[in-house]
Image 1 (cartoon, one colour):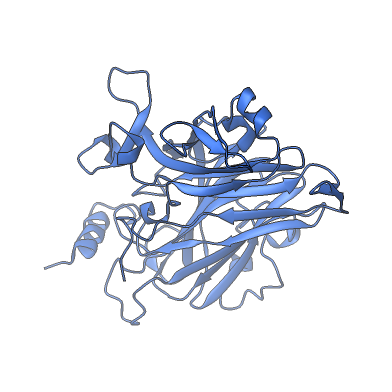
Image 2: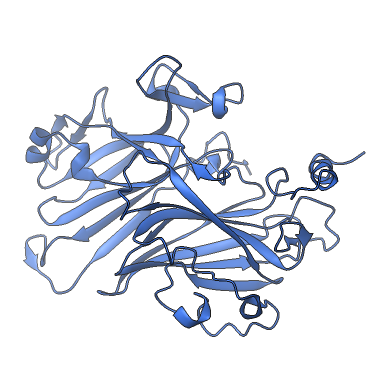
Length: 369
């Protein structure tokens, strides 16, 4: 009898279509990328198997499948607009590392491939393909997935397991500021386990010196859907039983504003506070940051909290309270200076910091040790 994944692949081959979309391939997930005239995102993809694809998406040793989901800032990205998708099968080889400038700012004459990659085993140069997937859509923000075919058929090389890994850094090359993260990897395209812990206690720096923003990428059991991505998640500060934060003298200040994001988006922390609350929290404080998926029930115009549920439409179902939701998005906090001071003391140059909030160790979609 066929194993489940092998059977799916055999059926796909029998009807003359690619196995991509029905097979459970290893995937690496880069939850955030930014591209602009002064910012680009550098990603490194490490592939340790020759269970890959060919350029047509059939089982072979020669290609990985790159999928870039993005919103064009120039076209008015909007927090609630869906992402568009662009994908390519691009050359690889076993034990290869490919370091790529997604924006094509650097290595413009080498298809975005960096650091003098010799193109001997991984014949990227001979392919004539462009690895800078965001070259023609910037300014934009988005996320990237890369998959191979490992786990979709019998593995004669004995390298089953997570065979893809990755790292990224977001590089503001005008000032030299940069921050980065390790990408999430999985043996399929389900990244619900990667959602940031909700709620998480979050420090907020003084608004009069430092900008604090959150990059939010909703997660799902299928992180690389075909054509577009319209997954919607919500973040909000709720520290007690209401929308509130503590100031730096342990006073609880209420008056926060939930914010929804579809696919990927940036939310400034100041936009999560009412004007009155922001005026009382000029020096910052801390609060419990929630993130969860939301759904619009049939016949309603209101989006409500949801949990992942295989019986629900689209794999999610409404719940009565945020306390019953599953963690629903990867959240990254970015902090950077607005002027030439820190703690009201003069400093030179630019400083910035980014933190990707990790998953809850008890996330029900995480494989427990």
